[in-house]
Image 1: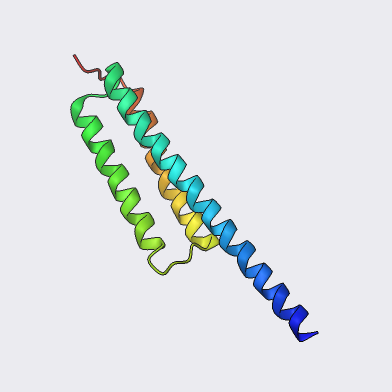
Image 2: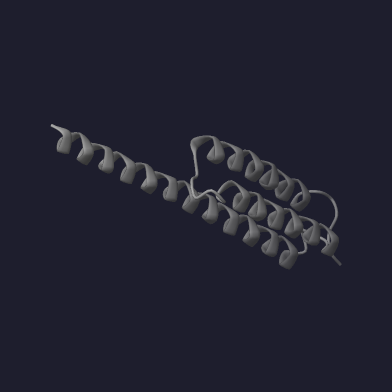
Length: 105
């Protein structure tokens, strides 16, 4: 009985670690996608140089924030929610600046 309980606990811990890694992977993919959106916006002229630098700085701050969340080696549900809020705000900034009336000459 004790061995069965230990095996179940180990299996549950493994599943939690896989889910945590999956959440980080999603966050990393989203971060990469946002960086590409900034590059495409600058290349197409939708973003001015100043706007692109501002958004690139914001992406660096988001990456640094993610590093602070994972410093203890764990990535909890609460950390995932915090990261999504920060990334949502960054995504909204990219969208807002790409679709304003300013264009690069």
